[in-house]
Amino acid sequence: MKVEQLYKALKKSQEAKGIYFNEDKDLVFELLESLLLNKERYGYMACPCRLACGDRKKDKDITCPCVYRAPDLLEFGACFCGLYISEALRNHEIESQYIPERRPPEKMF
Image 1 (tube, rainbow, N blue to C red):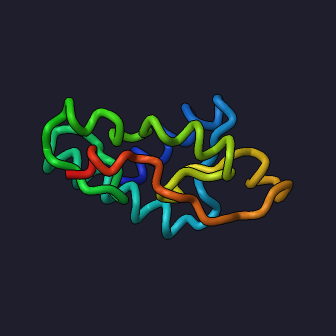
Image 2 (spheres, helix red, strand yellow):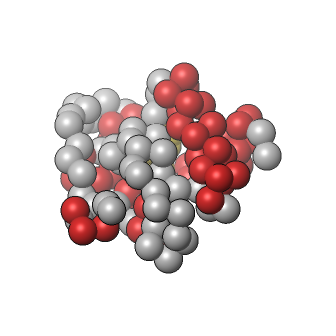
């Protein structure tokens, strides 16, 4: 799959849920390329902003969209890596802010 195809497919499916891509299209395409690289490398699209171990079960929480996306969008208006943003952030109803890592340290190694 090419980046443009992934972009179009995810844009359509996520916007239907009120979740949008970051307005920085260069960042979005860089992250999507990394997701495709991780899919090639591991067999699944592990979050490009986190270190995957290569074990699908252990990395289930960071397979995009990760389990941390929803709480990040709710609390901060964007996910940790910045790929997805909320409607409120997209509409400039809230300001962009630092998003802390939610993944427990014991899952990082």
